[in-house]
Every structure is written in structure tokens, then in C-alpha cells.
Image (cartoon, rainbow, N blue to C red):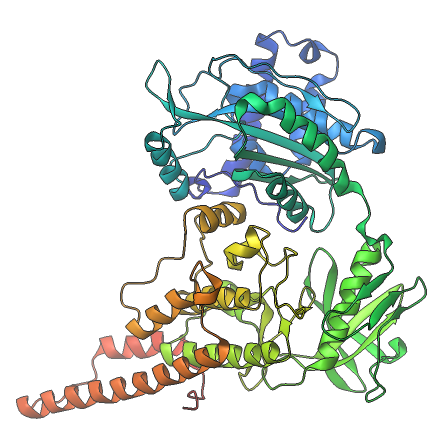
Length: 588
């Protein structure tokens, strides 16, 4: 699964240490067990149940125990049952749909709970009279800024209900789905719910240690009186995620006539125009050490003909038709591009089981690692230099009708000369002639709202992502670091959420940020214009710094006082040495 973070808005930062969290997990387990026994649940009295319940908690991430509402202990049993059903292909995927009551704060009374566990082979009816519904399993919290706004909106939109204790709520549906875990499952599920007409208000995504998923969505957009109809639609749509969409063994490359990539078991056949030779003999590759690992592949540093290279190897267990198609697409795109700000393609191995892509080795690592792991800091001139490098690379791609679709700091690499290059074209696509695409992809924290909503989009989705990257360069922070990825996605789409711009940011940079992350794609600038804007800002910054130094010097001259090098300035010098400052000033 692409994203396994729970999307609860609970502030886990308040927990001081991992050991404290683990103790809380044990406490949650014992409390759930106690409540189940006190409720005289038949299953809880069965021999061996305590071990089964503990195994349920241990196979799920720690976040599950920290986020689950212990007052709704029977929901844990429902999750356990769904995961059991997901083991059997005949009952997979398993799901449960129910009405829930959403309000700002739980009053501790879960109310009457009506569960109906579904598989692809059964369906049950719900009948909810005009009484209160139970709260969601993972309750909403005031820590979610868009969650708070939503609750305020419920008060004024005329559709709210007020219970006897004056708590504001609105009926929503909670959909819990369990199946075997796989790459892009979360995107498939969110796309499915969107196509049905549901709006995701809150989501929790978990992957088990043995390869299964448990995904919980709180949604609105469906009348609570028509829950039966929703169940019937989901009964038809949810099983589709189990279907292998890779049965079609050909991929039409949009925008280049009828050229097709054919996928064969013995080789991935990629079109060639005869102008270059890019097939790499795997015997000539030398693997040195692993640089990074992902859900679909591993990245190694190695050598090829004595040249330092990066080798991206697809994991054998994921070599299905979909992965081969993405691999072929990435090779096809890399072969077409050659620019100083795009990572250089060297070759590829296209004969399974070893499918790999060989590119130049970027010794400086990723911008993400520099910012978030090494805690590096960029001064404004350096931020602008990096941004100009990225904008030039992206402008070149767009001029060649290529949409990156996953622009983020982790996909920006630095070479030994501190030149930044755009990398990782695993989800990039050639833009179709209409200029509009519809498949969802990318990473939620950097993703444009139209992509999150699975609406048609074009190259302007990359501009939105660039705006988030520019903010990341300025602040050194992870976008929406107080939210989980799906929370951020919901906020971006439904509440117009954007990262908070630091107070003293240069006004011209603020203006550019706001233009890049406009909700309406047509209002965002092209990268050709972004380059001009960044170059203008870089020139202004140099002029302003010179003017500031001149004013300081003139002030000292008027006072006939010259600054002495104090211990404080020496300390500042030591501190400044830790701040990364690229040697090259942007060309203007």
C-alpha cells in the first residue's frame, strides 16, 4: 500500500517516547479485553481468545491501538473478523458499512451499534429509525483544523441535528474494507469511493505484518435513508479492486500514434527508433550497496563500465503486468529526455526476472534527505537556485508533453556540483493530445486537488506540486506535518488547506507560492513564467542584500563606530557554517 499511516487527527506528538506508546498499546489491549468480557460477548469467553486478540493488535501498526476508540471494543472484533475473511479468496474483499454519528467530541456514550459484515457474497439490510447512531471507530478530534471547520459548518448548513445533550452531529457512513495488501490499493479505494459519489471526511489506513489491509473511511454525500442502496452499489464495486487490471498486455503510448509497448513474460518490449542502444547487459552491472527501498523496488549504488551509477531494481514479487507496464513507461520516457536538470538515463535491463533502470549516480543525495534527515537549512539565494534548477527541468519535460505526476523533494537529486535534477519517472506519463488525464497518482502531501479528487487534470498539476516543494525548501519542514497524508488530502480538497507561509518570507516568493497552488489549474503559471519570476526574485534579493550592507556601512560611518568581532559574532559564524549555501548564485 502506498500510504499506511492512520489518518486519525489525534496528536501523537504528545507521547514522549516509543516505549510509552508500546505501554499504551498493552493498556488498550487489556481495556478492550475487559470491556468485551464485561459485555458477555460469547467470543470473548472462548478458550484462546486472549491470545487471538493480542495477535490482532500485534499484526497491526502501533497507531491502530493508539487511535482506536476503546469504548467501542466490539469494533475491534469486527476488524478482526474482516481480516479473517480477507484471508479467503472467496470472501475477499470483506467490508462493513454502517451509519455513524459525527460530532466534535464524543460524550462517552457509544449508543446503539448496528454492524453488518459483508463479503462479496452477502449483503444485509439496515434500519435506522430517528435515533442517534454510534460514533466512528476512530473518533474525530479538534486537532484536525479542517475537522473543526467542518463541525462549525455542520452548525450552519441547515442539515445538522442536535442531540439531547446539545452536541452537534450529522449522520455519515463508515466503510471498513479488508483485503490483501498491494501497491496503490489506497488510491484504488479512494478513487472507487469518489466515483460512487462519496466525500471522504476521515480515513484510517493500516497494513498488517502478514500482508493484509484494513482501511476505514468516514464519508458523507449519501442520504442516510438510502443506506441499503449504498450497500448494494458497494457490493458491486468493491470486488473490482481484486480484479487484475493488468490482463491487457498492451499499452498505447498517448501522443505518439499507434506505438505500443508489448509485455511478454520473457522480456518487456519497448519501442526503439534505432538511434540509440540502451539495453544493459546485467553481467556488466556491479552492485555496491543499497541506497533506498520502496514498496515496488530497491535502489542501489553500483558501477557500469567503471562509471558510478544508480540501479533501480523492481522487486521480483511485484513483477505483475501493471508493474511491467509502469517500468516500460518509465524507460520510454527516460529515453526521450536529455537535459542538465533531468537525471541522465544510461540504460535498462528488460528481461525478467531482473528488471532494472540504470541512471547517473547523484552523489549529493535527495533534497528530501538534506532537509528532513540531515536537517539542512537553505538560505534564500540557495532556495532560489534549487527552485530554478527544478523549474528548468520541469519546463523541459512539459515542452516535451511529459507530466511528472509525482514532483516532491524526494524526487529531486543533487550531483557533486550541487546541480539539482528531477528524477523518478515511475508514474510519469506522456500527456494525451487533449491535454487532460484522469488516472490518480502521486503522493498526497504534494498532490494537486484535482488529482486527489480523481478529476481530469493536465500539466498544471505539476505546478501545484512545485509550489509545495518551494514551500518545503523555504521552511525545511514536511508539508502538513501536523496531519497524516490522507488528512492533508481531505483538507486540500474540501477546505482549501495550504501550508502556512512563514511571516518574514519575501513578498515576491509569497506571491509565487499563492499562484502555484491556486485551486483552479488554469490560474497557475507555466514553468517558463516561473523561471522568469524566480530569476527576477534572485536578482532583487542580491540587490536588496547589497543595499542593506551599504546602509549598515553608512550608519557606522556616520557614527564613526566600526563593529568589533564579538564572541557572539564568532558563535554566529560557527552556526552559519552549518547552513548550506550553494556556491553558485542563480544566473539572472
